[in-house]
Length: 105
Image (tube, rainbow, N blue to C red; front, side, top):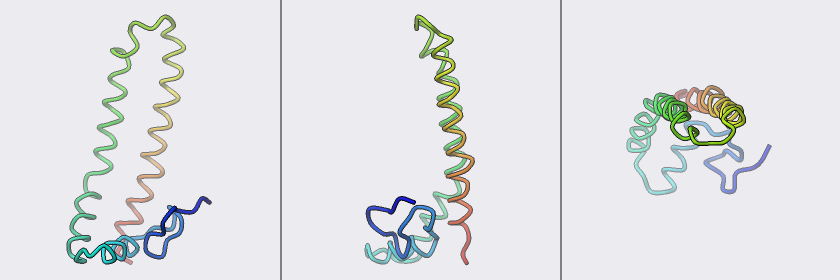
């Protein structure tokens, strides 16, 4: 696992980051716990929907962006691969992180 350049609370890797680590990072930055909690809740409430919207926007833009390419089939295969990567990031990385950060344990 690759270490974070700077630790976040007690977390040294992305996978280790918990809610308490973000609260501690906020404290170090001089932020009130209530402010950190409020902003974290606000972001967690929308991040997955925002990611879905971004992916949908990218998907819907394919025909417009690639209409003039000489080999649309090659472009489509490339685009489908990138779309799968984006969906994997949303459905695995972001979903796991949101679940971990929603936990107040």
